[in-house]
Amino acid sequence: DQQVKQNSPSLSVQEGRISILNCDYTNSMFDYFLWYKKYPAEGPTFLISISSIKDKNEDGRFTVFLNKSAKHLSLHIVPSQPGDSAVYFCAASASTASKLTFGTGTRLQVTL
Amino acid sequence: DGGITQSPKYLFRKEGQNVTLSCEQNLNHDAMYWYRQDPGQGLRLIYYSQIVNDFQKGDIAEGYSVSREKKESFPLTVTSAQKNPTAFYLCASSPTGVDGYTFGSGTRLTVV
Image 1 (cartoon, each protein chain N blue to C red):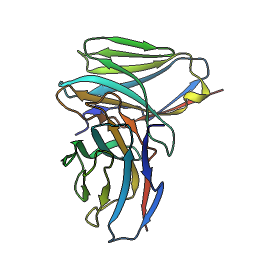
Image 2 (image 1 turned 90 degrees about the vertical axis):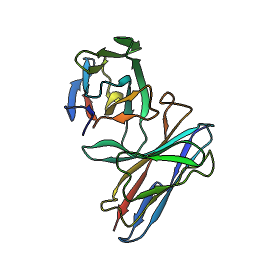
Image 3 (image 1 turned 90 degrees about the horizontal axis):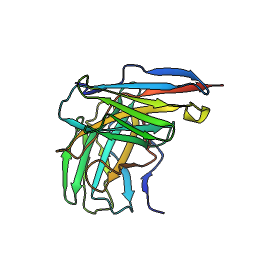
């Protein structure tokens, strides 16, 4: 049972344009959401997070939007840069738990 | 520099053999985790530990075992009972809960 889903396995965006990565979840107990970036043969690194009490959080070129009623969140990267090319994982947790549940990942390719 | 170290980076195992993956952290984090990454399946939780001498099964614990005798160390043993052990294994730690999750650089295990 995949509680966190990233339905787009890959995405290609031109440099300078906006990248939008999507994530859906099914567990209504999830109240904290994170995005991680991963390069091949390396561990994921934290990008940005959002609590369920907010609907938007911004950090530089990265913005995460949360729509609780739709159980949907998205990561916007503006402008996209070639160095953003990586696999992006959405993750979620419930405040009562101490573990993260990850999505399947979306591979972003930023082209010149 | 504080961090989390996984060793070895690459590991080959013959079928029927047990193998132990090392994970050490000097971040003074209480919680430690083991995840497995397979193509198209994201990161799946194997085991986690919130405190020394205590650990819980994750979503795919069958065929694996762990120990947490020291705060700094959380080794994972892949036993011969694990039917499909070839994968990329990631260890992570966090102070409490899910904030500050830090990942190691991973161990790629191949069964030959």
